View 1 (cartoon, rainbow, N blue to C red):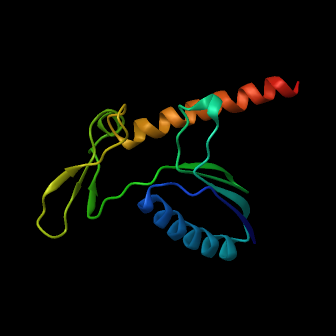
View 2: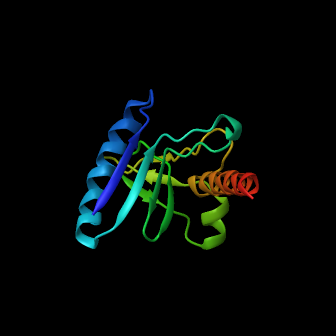
Length: 134
């Protein structure tokens, strides 16, 4: 197992804490499964400011874009695929069952839409790099 960690710390304490927890989880899984990869914290490219994922994991089986959220409780996802893509997401407090909307940045209705936008921006970046190398 080999997991290379590229840590670009952020000013958001919760994101740094979550990154450390994710590193621990991924290292355990990689050791168990024999995977290799690179985990990049807080990737940024000035030419592609639309791409704001909190982390990227590139490994044997693909690429995963990660966006950290700072919520506790039970995530209440919409009941069907259409609403999953287009409705607000909520979490429910274990303490008092209150509901709280899960924010997805200023421009997105839910975290799924946020990650779709990041995926599209990342794809544009990769395609542009491929054009440069041809």
